[in-house]
Length: 370
Image 1 (tube, one colour):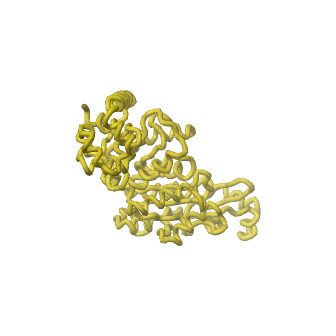
Image 2 (cartoon, rainbow, N blue to C red):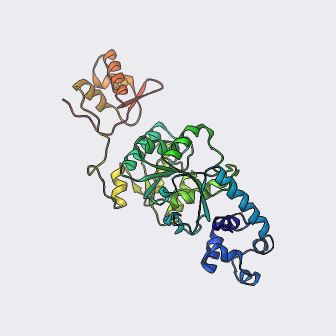
Image 3 (tube, rainbow, N blue to C red):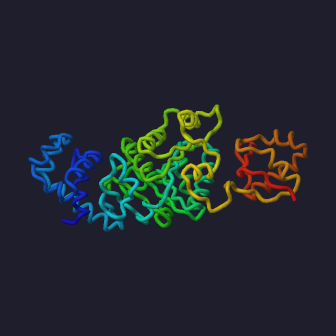
């Protein structure tokens, strides 16, 4: 029997979860030895449930046949199956207490062992959160870190896109089978990640994205990573599950601060209170991970030099939206001139316009005057 088929048979055995399977591997040594173990030897495993013992001893033909079908479907779909003892199985993920016995991979499986950082956050993210996630992912990707996230709408999507926009690599960890694109709005992003990264899942093909699968998916996101960055999270956010799993796995946890009156930042602020590293920019993460920056000591997107009036208006803007009336009053310039300057700054990618005549800056540093 193919080694992959042996691992798939174990993965498809009812009641045999990743943590229990790891104990079996530690006891017997390999998938083949588990499948060929005697009933007596298996009965001596106190952590093995009786119903699972029955499947391993009496219904191996059923799980073996299911594994063969899964293997054939994966090969037709161009999916690479990495078993727990495969040389390409990511070593960091193998260290956790409940590593998946197999990983289905679309894209480049070698990226799973490259240094990576996870970025997670709210699905219903604010414009501030989306911008920070995209910019930070781009900065980290330029430092040859793989950006790992969960492909959800909001912060996850912004992180994946930021990495790709910087010419970097990204990994999407799915909570469903790899033959399902969820959310469907991300179909184009799905194609881009396959070409410039990897999409992975522990779930068999055809597995639907049911809610209970996502907490289990999150342990893989953190397990693959050197650390986890939380960009936005409410107090009772599912994102915090990933952060706490990261801590249990011995990974670093980073948090982006936000407005103190924003519910979307409450989870991040609580993480910081509990000891998470407060992050202003990519350098904070790189220094904590003891990684060498290939750029300057501090990585920030530098805005180009601007004429005096444009520099004045730009300096009045913040990462939080500001109404145009407040800008006009502070700049003490005619309204039509302010509108012209804001349009010019927006065209240069320094400012974004928001509903209700609000504007916010996208670059962190003030441009120098000419």
